[in-house]
Length: 43
Length: 305
Image (cartoon, rainbow over all chains, first blue to last red; front, top):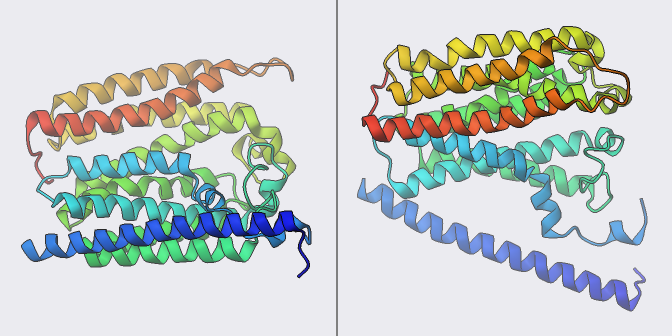
């Protein structure tokens, strides 16, 4: 795929922001599952 | 569809827009109110998870709705700026995001909260994405009445997340939103109806005419007045909710009267009474459920009838 330097920079920027968003969501779910497990074991 | 913008992956904001954040705020609020007003206790983490699952389910259903209706959305002013009609995202990504979010929400609800709440969550997603979006919306002017049930699920699911059983109170909360939806949506449809007619969606004002729609708005508001107070009459809530419900519903009915008995004064009509009724309908739902929760905390645990 031929891309102009501008498009390539935009692609990198979008990939980066999507990866950051996905990383934060995954980290959030890891924390959530940890606390759910603690809560359910306590009950 | 081979422009440079469609080759680039969609931004995370576009996925967020697929979840219909503004609709979700009402869903999260009513779901959380159902959870807070229910008798019994729920661990705060589990309660948070239940509300998160309701939000994820609503988001997933919203994404599937936008995936299915992308061609219709492109031709309506109100929806033309959504990610799919704008070509900011490919349809397959939207579809997979919708299915993924929907499945994850029901699974997490079942594992973390309880399976009855998970079953109702799954039912509400199928109801909205399939029964409403695919089946009824393009076929019948009663689409809003029957499809409105989808939006009535969140407080019922929130309640059942706490109690783990289906009782009369969550069904009443469901019935109240069910009765609220037609006047809420038809008030909107009255002032955006040209768009719906253009894309062939059989909204009530287009099919049955404005006059009939206006009378039906009044009928639903009139039915909502006694219905909204039933939770008080059966002893499920105290008078804080009961009297608030009667006052809020009476104002809703009063605002529906000018809408019911007027006619559009030509194309230049500003449709002020209709816009006022629509704006009030949103406020009404927020206030009614806020009072339900306030009542619960003032009068202590309601009975679980």
